[in-house]
Amino acid sequence: MDNQEAKFILKAYRPGGADAGNAVFCEALAQARHDPELHAWFEREQARDKAVAAKLKSLSIPVGLRESILAGGKMSVTRRSWWQQPSWLAMAASLAIVLSLAVVSQLRTARLDLGQLTAQILDDTAHGERHGSHGQEASQLVAFLSQPTTKLGSSFPLNLGQLKADGCRTLNFAGVEVMEVCFERNGGEFHLYVMARPSSRDLPKGPQFVAQNGLHSVMWTGDHHLYVLASSKDEAALQALL
Image (cartoon, rainbow, N blue to C red; front, top):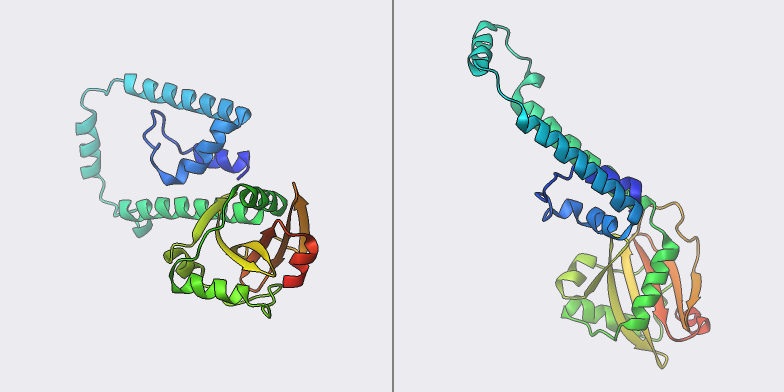
């Protein structure tokens, strides 16, 4: 998520912390806490919203306003069109919010920084430990990956939903949910990170190798998923698994 997307979301954040527990705002709020420029903008927006709210509260309601409104309603004999009915207007407003959030989600996926994703994965590999498999789906996947004849440089059957249900380790990189499965092969330990294939135009056309602080990784895409394999073994060891 960049600052422009964060601002788009935070403009709907009510002053006073009423939306602090709303998951829609969590990522944007976290970015505002760590980005000085965005934090300053957010403080100004909240101050302006508070000032407007205070001004509205200070306005006195004219005497007889309620009676005037009710009288005007009785005088009107024109039936509202179906699209002017309150229920339809509320539905339209809800739909607009849903579509806006969907656009933000699509932008976030389309702008996924694959270089940053790889760097975060290598950092996780460096500081993480080997995690065992849980459940039938995860155990079968580990057994499949550990076979000497298994080639990883293409698509293979995966059910991310079942892996997650099995208790497979789930991480969040740049707002994207990623599954991690650890396995051993050829005398080395490997960490396979898998996520749903993003819509980014910058997806690798073939295997992309990256080295960082003594660790190595290779990224490739399949029909439905994006894969990153990381290990302390060298590039040749990774290449042998592809």
